Structures are given as C-alpha cells and as structure tokens.
Image (cartoon, rainbow, N blue to C red):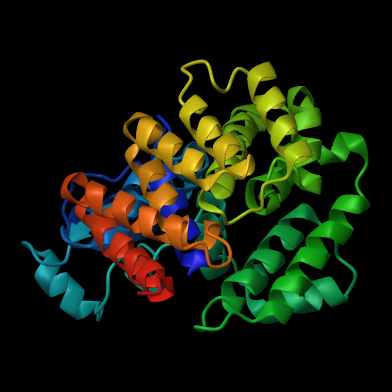
Length: 369
C-alpha cells in the first residue's frame, strides 16, 4: 500500500520542463515520408483521451529536455489518437490493444519494437527505446559485453536499466535482479575518479539511482553540484530539487521514518540552495514537526490549520499516510483521523477520493466500538 501511494504521489509532484519532444502535427503517411527524407526512424505514441498513463507521459515525460533531445535527434515523432480519424485503422494495423502503446519502426515501415505502458522517469524511457533500436543493447548482447569485462557508462546505464525494468514486469518484483543492477551501478560508481563522476556520460547514476538527498548518490550530487559539466548541470539541479521535495513528502506520509538529524540537514540545505523561496514547504514542515513532537491532538490541530495551504498532491499524501502514521491502539487518534479525512471528501479531487476511502476503511477496521 505504501509503495502504491508513494508512486501515486510522486507522479503528482513531477513538473514539466520547457524543452519537449517534437510530436509533428502531420498524417501517418507524411510522418513516414519525413523520416525517409531526414534519415530518421519513426516513433508513434498511440493514446486515447481518457487514458491516465497517456496523460502522465504527455505531461511528465515527453516535456523533459533530455527526452526531447533524444527523440528529436533520432525520430520523426507522431502522436495518434487510437479512437479518432486514421488512428482507428492504424491501431488495428499495429494491433494496439492497450494504452499508451509506443511503436518504433524504420522509414520503410518495418516495426522494430513495441512498448506497452510508460515509465517512471525520462531516463528510464530513453533506455527502453534505446534497447529496441540498438542491436548492441539486446539483453543477450549486453550480458556478453559485461561478462567480457566492458565497463563503459553506456553499457552500465543500459544493462542496469534493463535488469530493473525486467524485474518489475511481474506483479511481484524480482528483488534479485534489482539488487544485481544496484550493485552493478555502485561498483561502477566506486571505480570512477571525481572528474569522471561529474562527466555528462555518468549523469544517469544520479538521475536514475539517487532516491534521496541523503543517500550516497544524493550526497555526492549535492556536494558537487557546481562541478557537473554544463550539458547536465540543469538536469542535476532539477533532480536535486525533486529529491528534497520527495524526502519531505515521504516523511509527511510516513513512508520514510522521521529522523531528526536527516530532517534538520534537509531543511538547512533547502534554505542554502534557495529551494523554499516561496515558502511552499513551510506547511509541510510544520505538520512533520508537530507529528515528531508526539502529541497526536496537536498533530491533528496542525493538519486542520495547514491542509488548505498544501498543494493538491501533497494533501493526498497527508491523507494517504495517516493509517501508517498512527501507531498502536490510539483510539482517539484513529477516530480523529477518520473525522478529518471525511471532512475533506467534498472538496477532494476524484483521483484522491478512491484512495481516501481505502484509508478510511483501514482506520475504521482498527477502531473498537
């Protein structure tokens, strides 16, 4: 449950960059003709207007600069509504049955690969498509290259990314593959010089594997943020900001435990990095600190005061974490949590209502009549 809620929350929190993937407003035939003329491949995004994951890809992944740079260089990109116009027949032709579906083909309309579903980050999605178009990045070839002793940035990024993606294909993730990928990246990182660690080719380590400003990659990235080459400095800065945001929301929701030393470090560094100039994190911090003080009545009083000052996604995080935050058999706190959540339902966005209902059910299961 916690992982589901965290993923949901993080998706809400991602913002779009200015640069973006260039989806051309042309017909399918015109797109293929353009690919031939420009010596590029064709990338098709089959979507529908009602598809939530399609919207997340459109709003969160394709607008990213690194994604745009990659796709604009290699592909003529087409966005096709599978339920309108020529999209209906094209979806049948390419056997599209779920959304989003991404088709990669050459300019002679030979399909090189298909991907159903999006990804959690731009770097991951680039890796997914790159493994379709580059014969040196098939699973078999990457394994052979790695076992043969190759330790290039390109191989480590692609092979570790493949292991993590394949580990998550089943309902129960293969932790062995995830551990193998993490060890591969960590071994690679530890053998780099300081100069290599801030090189453009190694930015994937931080953009894909730094999960907190307090983990090894996060600490290094923050400490050396000014030393990264200009080509990746903006992406690194954006990721640093995202990690601090993620840290606070994780503690707010109870996904990450409150640690006074770590929390105070994050607060201090966010001030030093000017990441809270608009004071948007102040309400989050007041709620976290109230909870950490241990008085649940004071905590709920703070929640009541600050709820309206939180962004919509953060409001959801606060509510989604309440069942986990209430420890033991505190009946007063359980009942107050239910009352608090119910009082917010009327103004809650539809996406949050379903999850809020689940939390209410969990809380009420713990209440003794």
